[in-house]
Image (cartoon, rainbow, N blue to C red; front, side, top):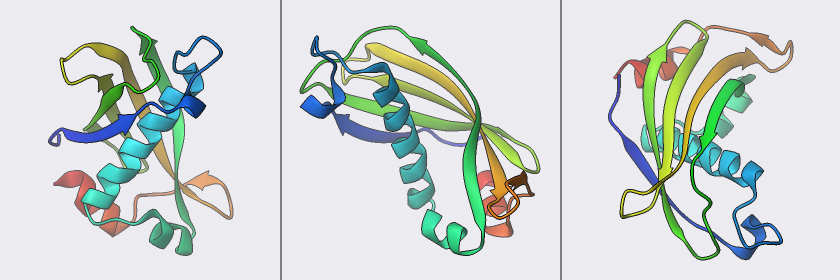
Length: 133
């Protein structure tokens, strides 16, 4: 549905566990940052959405851990919008290194919500436009 967007991440000490390997929850943070930067690249600032009372939340996530990244590794987080419905969208994401070694694959479904009611709402026009390009 869309082109691949790449976001670079370096592994810092704070990202690792006692063994020097990226702690599993931090991969989820890397995925989130990449989706946020994808939106920013498309001209959408999440702060503007929040001011409208609209938020994007993770509805479901399927993650496959393939290889552990280590301190100082340079990673590439790729994001591709796979599909979109009225109030949800699915991203396929992958974390690799410059040599193509795959660390994580993930399918992430996000939902658009009314932040006051915490209920799903249709994507606002600005997001529909971005998601349908």
